[in-house]
Structure formats: C-alpha cells, structure tokens
Length: 189
Image (cartoon, rainbow, N blue to C red; front, side, top):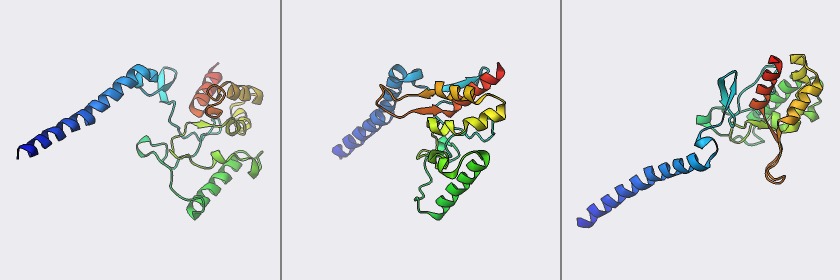
C-alpha cells in the first residue's frame, strides 16, 4: 500500500510539473525570445486593431485583394482543411464554383490564368498570404474599383512582397491584410 501512495504522489507531481510547469516555461521563452513578446502580431488602421497579421480574413469587395478561400471561414478555433480528396465530387464542385466566381470578377482572365491558390483552400484554412502572381492577377480589378492607376497598385504589391529568408528559405508571398491596409492608407491620402 505504501508503494501505491508513492505512485499517486509521483503521478500528481508529474502532472503538475509537466501540465503546468512546461506551459509556463514555454510562455516565458516565447515572451523573451519570440516576436512581440509572445503575443500575436496585430495590424492597425486608424488606431484600431483590424486583424491578426498571421490569420487570413475574408475580403469580398472588388476594391480589396482577396486571399485564399478557407474551408473553416478563417475560424482559428476550427483550423483545418476540408479533408476532401481532389476526386471528391463536392470538392470539385466547390473549386468549380470558385473558379466561376473568380472569372466573373476578373473577366480579363482566361480559365488557365486563374492561380490555383485563389480557388483552393489552404491546409489550415487560415492562410494570410498569397503569391505575387495571385496578387498580380487582381491588380486590374482592384485598381479599377478604386479609380487608381494599375502601375501604382502593382508597385504597392511589389513593395509588400516578402522575399524568401536569406534568398533560400520559403517562398515569395504577399500578406493580404497588410496589402489591403496599404490600399486604405493610399486612398486616404
């Protein structure tokens, strides 16, 4: 019976140490070594927080750049993909609907020019970035809706394009929320 109580005490101590202590250690490390003191990076417009920099949002108006579709409506609590195979009829219907919607908003594009990322959801459903090509095909629509010169809008996309780290790690990408914030700030001037 003595061994039983020792086992219970050890189990409770390990639960406390690993269940609480480990989380506190991780939180402390992130506060010291992580960006923003371990807090989510937020994006501001006119002194108000308008979103998290690393979580996508739904933009549907023609005057904004659109991000990747989300299978979870950009809900961080339910992050994940649709888990439908590329041969699933529902998945194929969803992609076809997205292609048709994208083409309707971009009549100057052919079906082959629609970037696949603009009609397929990411694995997390929270992807905040698109490729420079995904942004470039939208420049004409956004510029027209805002009454801006396409060269100016393309320059904005180019200036906000993030390059691979050290030129090797990662891919070129454009954060959609930051791009749309820059558009709003440009329109205010």
